[in-house]
Amino acid sequence: MDWGLHLPHLGRQATRDNVIRFAQTADRLGAHSVWTSDHIAWPREVNSKYPYTGDGSFPGGYDTPWLDPLGVLFTVAGCTERVKLGTTVLVLGYRPPLLTSKAWSSLDVISGGRAIVGVGVGWMQEEFDVLEMPFDHRGARSDEQLDIYRTTWTQDEPSFDGRYYRFPTIGFSPKPIQDPLPIWVGGDTEPAFRRTVKYGQAFHAAFQPIGEVQAAWARIRELAAEAGRNPDDITLSIRLYLDPESSQEPKKSIAGSDDQMADTIGQWADIGVTHILLDPVARGGPDARLAAVERFLTGVGANV
Image (cartoon, rainbow, N blue to C red):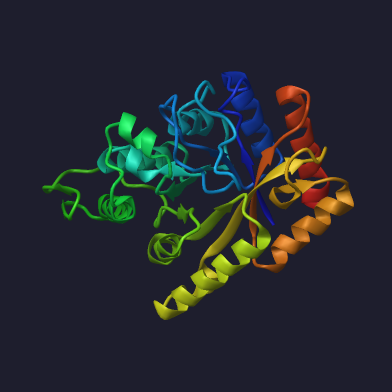
């Protein structure tokens, strides 16, 4: 199993020192990757429903400090050597595609080929509105954005003429080091599954019940076979809480004793998961969360 770690770049723990400590610990202990989440400007009033809680509420909100996800990854690129750098997930429609494509290419170069482009279409219309970015047809717009990424990352003289975006022949350099620069797709809908097959090196689920992820994975593998793509070339990833104190929902967590954690990990592995992104929770602030991460990565995580 590969292990990812969500960095403390939001909430009261979002400080330079905490981000660097978590990232360097992950790097030192041989974790696969470190990750950031994406929000830019949180409206005071939100009626949109978050898709990964039963009541549509989002944990956190209006007054939560939230460091820029790509900015944090650039910082981490400079203080680590091996660990990969991903977003869980960057909302495609929040930013102009050429600008974001350049950022990803730059991150891959600066990090020596360690970027993971985790993407999703977003859910909060109010945030699109305050950013003055279109919310309509966001799935189709997202697909065009990914086409632009591919075009700019691979073509010597890229140009694009789509339904929503277009630009003439441009110079775009440097290209990413990785070829392909890996795209991990999030979402829980049929369009997300098709997007994974068309563009993705991984399907990246988040806090969903194991039965839902299993069904989604079966559908993605079916779609991959229909498209003539080897389903085994796609990775299955899940984001879960690392919760030794069992304070969160059990279905969304690796929690409890070492034996309980190992059993939970085994259940996810049985449905095809090969990467688990740990989102640590523990009373005692960042120090306690970092200690929980270190115990896990040198204990249960090293032995499953």
